[in-house]
Image (tube, rainbow, N blue to C red):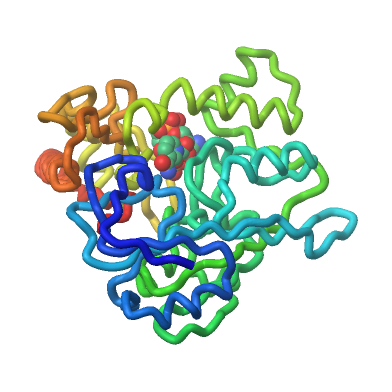
Length: 337
Ligand code: NAP
């Protein structure tokens, strides 16, 4: 275990801003955390665990320690007639893991194909796409408390999962290093294909419903809409879809009759953030080296070596404009450091 000094993070996060960290190390075994904690460079309050770097924006140089989680391994820990339980190292690539499940005929994560990042990052924001969220297949995870060095097991309830949210984004932000995640997958088909884009893809292509076909369909739909971070540096959806009260929806509908929405629990509706941003004419716009993707208004792009601050300023500008027009406050999905 080596702690490097003054390291560029360009290759370690998908926005690829020209950013450095004071200290940098990688973690390949959970037990190494204790060794890291004994180093003079370690300060629990100035430490960030990095996975694939696909949901993070560094505004400026980071004055602490970045630990890149590279804990690998997929282990079957239990199996019965209907389910298999897999314990996956937090540093495994999420999409590679989904591919493994498809090959093994394990059902449950296929709708989450092509989501960038690592397995350890998946519960932090309860990743979701096409009607499936991580919590639907989650069993438990193990994590090490950076303050005490103690390992702790978290059940789904203890993770406090919410919409693109968990306890690791709120109360315990940057407090724990997730070392592995256990998921419960189905051995029999349980397809979720009600999502409009998926449903129409299936009917247009007269697609036979198999695990591999669904996996390929999701890959195709996502790739047609979302820019590849290797070509256009981005961090996927920058904002969450906001939830508003039904009463506010009724009043907004008078002014914006075409406003899309989806009923949620407790008299709330979910409004697509992309639609709100599009209505403010941001889609495809450039602001110096940064901008908003031409095909997807939720995706901010670092076109030309822009800084973290420039991307953050753009996000603030979008938030303020949406608030002014709709009186809706957008929340960032991306973790801002
Ligand atoms: P879309 O099909 O254009 O739909 C726009 C939004 O409407 C989505 O964000 C989705 O919310 C919501 N929506 C659509 N149909 C719905 C339904 N039947 N019930 C409830 N909500 C519905 O979405 P998209 O932008 O192409 O994304 C497709 C899926 O991939 C979405 O689930 C999205 O969250 C996911 N995605 C995630 C990221 C990421 O970086 N995290 C990036 C791109 C896309 P939900 O987002 O709540 O599903």
